[in-house]
Image (cartoon, rainbow over all chains, first blue to last red; front, top):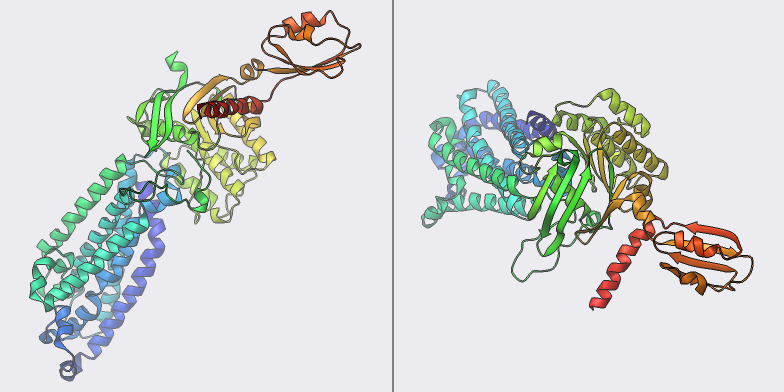
Length: 292
Length: 307
């Protein structure tokens, strides 16, 4: 399992550094900018009052929360699940199905490693990647905060990142499960991505329209604290609420992976077996060589 | 007897939706032999091999590889086998060496790296180059190398020479013979009949998901039809020869040059020829390719009849 873990983590190395460094620099830049305008916050609040209040309500932010940390919440943490969610969904859907569609799993799984070890080796590497990126972002925050007069500790700034990690893990594992159920990785990442975007908007809209509150209760974004975790502390119940389905999705994906045929080009169908659809799957050029 | 069998397959069936890929495969491969698995693309060769490695699950039947049920203990089976997929795909970002080192880690670092380098030299393969920069043939060489590097007891190779130039095809076949000499059982699929004929001791022919023939390569060639060309000093009546059971006339000409087809033993014909002044006598055995095509010709004919 550890050989699989190390190999997969090496493959994630570029993504971890790319996403981590860019978002870490962005975090540092936001901290610097917002702390520098903190002194002029009174004037800024007067300016912002000119904007429609609904815009802020969408993000669950009141005018009273317009401080440097409040702005950090609006401008950084509220979008982060969408941004990092792109990585989580892409990596989750490709964790097994990506190599399977490329035909690489056939060779690797012909080696003496059980499917369970292989699956959890890769999932652990995925978890490590999802932990490493927020850790690098936290590094960016920690360095920038040290240069400002903001009254926030590195530990406090880690709280929203924990909430962020749980949130993207949920969508990453959902993408993983869908990749084991749906006929292609692309379809799995599209469905998981759509659910991510839908969840973001439903939660935001529910702030404007209380009638949507009942639906928003089912949206994972409703349990994402974002920047509020800095001042309010972590809501452990919400974190667990996000992690439990992630664990369930992972276990279901494992169950499915243990039982399924490993596909290679030309075998089986890549399309959903919908009623009335009997045409064979269209083959890619590389699949043209029949390998039954 | 059972201990001498490296691979036993009974009643193996597998379908992909409505497509029946395997329709009850029965096959036995002896330990220490080179077994050629012949069939055209789509006959079921790859499916059979992948079932044996638990990469796909059969719908019915049983498999024992080195005495182990691959579905019950796939890791034990894979630890003792080397496999080359027909559609070989590797991580393009790795070099040949990094790919082999990763696969060796999965094997608990069983491979002797000196032997790996030796094999790479034999195959004229540069392991430092990234896989994305390798030609199809060189990728196959990496695939062959990973299958052989831990000196497995059983080799399951799906079209091992596909994409290689003729010299390298010979080298790979030589490595298979060497593996057998070191005690390994080699089971390889191919649709290149000459290579099967060159190294395989026994041959299984698969057609539309069913085994239609299993026999020693030479037995298969020997027991089939032979072509005999005879040159007589004087013109003879071919009817005197075609009266011999199993002999039929292919070409009579002027009675001096006769081409016959002989089924079974030659004894009757040789005795019949003793009565005539023979100038030259030439026999020609069919290649495995002709035998193989004959099986498919039979199939086509039976289809036509059915229509």
